[in-house]
Each structure stands twice: as structure tokens, then as C-alpha cells.
Image 1 (cartoon, rainbow, N blue to C red):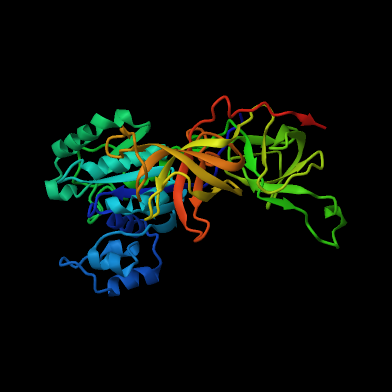
Image 2: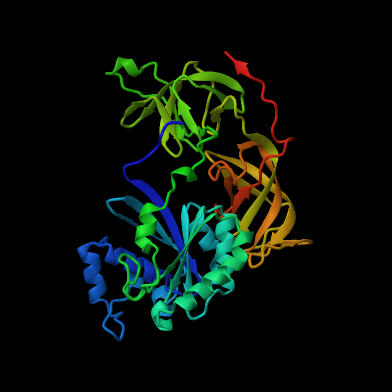
Length: 438
């Protein structure tokens, strides 16, 4: 496999933790100390009436934009911020800490490469710390940072830092997260956020920004199983350029794997096979492309292909079934009960679907499965069975977060009522596609 790298790659991360652990302040400090704020943003902070008794600006206001958030001093909605350093670009999702906003936390973390769990050094590991770590594990977030905040309030005690790390180590083996970094910080004062702190001579690890800039994420994408859901059939209409008249490209984002010119591919669900003739991007043609690039493929044969079809490697076919098994986070105030019909949006297509049964609810404080559940309430996580109007072409969420995820939409209101993670296809859901090679 060729070496794959970006001069500046993109890291998506979210912050989570209990109420008043300092999530919004941490992000504000990260932006402020890394000089990622515009002058007008700094002036607005300095002009605001939200000045602490010590004369410090309230950095939490950079993300807590709602009036209710500022009045209560809590985060309610998911706030996104963007910044860049010479080493990497970043998208931050500041997610709420309250139990009743679990759905918001799931939304903000669903696309993250890394999750920052904040722990108040005075309180140590509490239920919300375990809850958010478990959600990060369920969402298959590959990297975790445990930022032990407010270390200044425990006199920068190395003993307290190691005690909290030991509390985490007790339940981390139950989680499928292989990369965990512990960092002692003070978000309010900026210790170990961008620069190393003189208050922690016993800590030899990276600063928070240093870790975010260097954590290895290239292998987080699935580069083994080529998948490209077709988003748009590209037929340029330019009467002055006659070379484009025969151009018929298939545009979409590569959801997994690598595709090369000359590679044999299969179009699903039709089963027709062809060979990749050209790979185009906005910057010109490529010999190969990989996830998560957006490209336009030109095939050797003019096949009947439309939006929602999936182009895959002919030697590595995904599952296809209208009977699905999934984990979901229920987001609607009205509970989920079996039998109701929804719209299911998966990659580039939307199909009708019905929930046929609830297998169990997942206790997100212990990961235990609770059987005999008649309904799922808002913010509940559970395992359900679904039946769709036509088969879905999919992979298990554990192997591909893009082709293994979906949302449920309420038809009457168009409200998103659930986020779902498909379990791996069974042998029954892996049909023998008939190869219609031309």
C-alpha cells in the first residue's frame, strides 16, 4: 500500500464531562492561547460584562452562545469551532455535560476522531465521566484524552493526578479504546494547554495542543474495504467544450478503502461489474484515491447507475439486507415503540423503515444490557431490529463508521429522532451477488 499523508490533516474532536468541569473554558483557552481568535472576538470578550472577580475574561463565552447557557453557566447545545496551526486543522465540538443532553453529546461526538473527557481534580471520576467514556467507546472514537482539570485547586498534587488515573484504569479495559492520554491542566489559567506548566515538573507528557497536533489519525480511516456511495451522476453540459459530451462520471465521497485506475469494481445492488477508467477531482485526474476523499469515477462501461447505488471492490463485497440489527441513541421526547414507521437515511439514500423489536436497553453507566424493555425514552441507548423497504448495502459500524451509520427521521415533522450504528452483517446478510461482468 502506498504511503498516504496530508501536509495539513484535519482532526475532529469533542469535549465532554460533567457540569462545570470547564469544557467551554478549556476550548476558549485553547483558542485564545493558540492565537486562533480574530481581533473582534477578543475585543468582544474584553468588552463583555462577564468579567471574573480576578479581572479575567470569561473564555467560556466563546462557545456558550445561547443566552440560557450564559445565564446558567452551563452548555446546552453543541457548539462548533474551527482553528488551525501550522501542523493541523481542527474542528471542535463543545458538547453538554447534563444527563438529559446525552443526545447532544452523541451528535457532537459522532464524527470525532478524538474525545476529550474533562475530570474535575477535586471530584475525581464520577458517573458522568464513566458515561461519556462509554459513549465514546460505543461511537468507536479511536483516541481519548482524559484532561484532569482544576489541578490548581488541589495544589498541583501528583498523587491526586495518579489517583484519578488509577480510577479510570479500573474500567478502561471494558472499553474498546486503545489510545488514552492523561494530561493535568488548568483551563482557567492555561497550564499545559498550549505551553508546558512550571507547576507540574513531575509531568513529562505533551501539552493538550501538542498532543492534538501529533496524534496519529491516518490509520483511523478504513483503507481496506473500498466503498463509494454514488451521490450524483455527473454529466457536464458545456456546448463549447466538445470533449465533455461523452463524459459520464459518478461523484461521491469514498467511504472506505482505496480505488485505483484499472481496478475492477462492482455496482450494487445491480451486481454489474466494470473497471475504473479515470479518477477525477477538482484539481485534476488521479491514479488512485482513498477515504475520505470526494471524487468522480469514470468507468469503462456505461452502466445504469443512480444516486444511492454503491461502487465497491469486486473482491470485497459488503452486506445487503432489509433486516437490520443496530444500536441506537433515541433523541425524541416521544418514546420509541416497535411498529412505528420512519425514514432511514443511510449514506446517500433514504428509505422507509419500521422498528420491529427492541432487543434491550444499554445501561450507559455500566454497559449492562437490560432486557424486557417495551420502549426507549429520550437519551436512551438500545439495540433494535429494523425492516427497510429495500435492502441496504452496508458494513458494520465497527469496521466502517460511514457505511455503518444511519439516522431515523419522523416522516410528518422531518425531525431526526435517532442516530444508529449497524451491527456487522450476518452470513445471511451477505448474499452471493451475481456478477454481471460486461
